[in-house]
Image 1 (cartoon, helix red, strand yellow):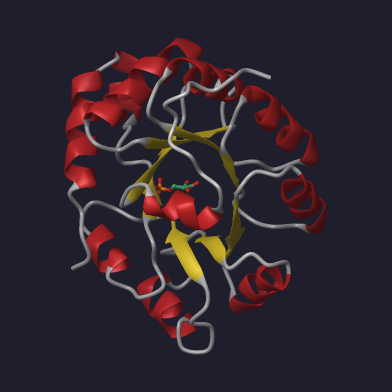
Image 2 (cartoon, rainbow, N blue to C red):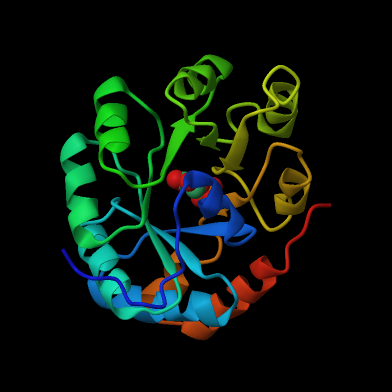
Length: 219
Ligand code: 3PG
């Protein structure tokens, strides 16, 4: 396993993951070489956290590269779909993991791996099923398509103990409204790392988007 740098922020729980920044950038890299400069641009812009997804072939190697080479950033693995991937991202040095949904075998593996987990839920029954496992901090996904802010706001009535990172359809325009909900700790989104900017290595653009995102506050 690759050792993480000494100055990596400490993350002990899913609640800690939500407290790092107003936004968790959800990132796809097609080339592993993109990951380190991209992560450094996020840090320069004031977003010291990244969710590197396993949606591309390069995802796993990207996690390992950022975990071992970029100081001062919390590195998570996103789009974790199988128990095999859970072991792979632990070995790569991920500090937390995110699942879009929470089927039983995946959930067992994720709970067993020892890393803070942001498990995905889109309905109240899924949220309560995760709560039965002790997971009171969750990813609400796909946030806009699953009922948006009215849905999550309604959840806070019967379940005030649950906290969320909504992801999926969150934008710079609506992020402050999401952050204003009492049960939202931070939001997640892909807008900080546009596909074109990543492909062209436009790290200044990503730094600018991160700087704007770091200033987001509840509306
Ligand atoms: C995720 O996996 O969290 C979403 O795909 C992010 O969705 P977005 O592109 O709407 O931000």
